Image (cartoon, rainbow, N blue to C red; front, side, top):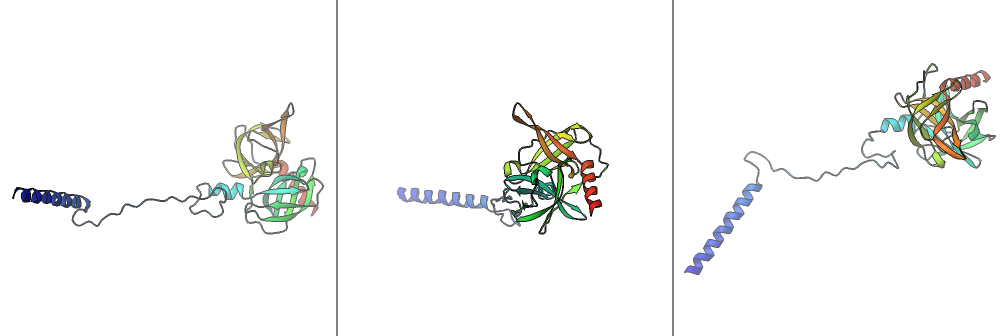
Length: 242
């Protein structure tokens, strides 16, 4: 008899525990059960930004200052250039990038490779204009001819450093001369011919053409650019020749 009572007591305790636990898991009367879901965040692949799963928060920068930059291969050397629309689609670069070549190869942001014809070079200003043989989706905007530079203006320099795909570096305008400006955005070999943007407006204000050296070493944060007023003079000179 005593054993039977002990068994019944244990069963009663278990039943009470199960009922209490189930009641705690159930939602209040009138509410539907809520499922706990694990959030899976899928982000864009920074190496291949052309197929983002979610919108890249820097997509404007990609489209306005990164995608218009191209890698140029001329003979055994590589450099950079920027696609501009000047009545037609052209690529602006440095004269020393194309040297004496009549045609060069260009690689776009999406790894498309095509040829381009060298239209005109200006070795004094160190500028060159080339025309791609295929269609190009993105182009950069030039700053106004009367653009006024100031020291400390923040800039983005985009270029194919060391022959790699285009990459950005940030700095400021540090020197303003009549025929050239200097920036502190790090510049490496392969950046020559690449665009320099006003970081506030995303407009091209210059083309990177040289880097200072000290005791045989590159001072990457002391780079020279051909300023926008010189670019307009170069483009207008070509227009007069047409």
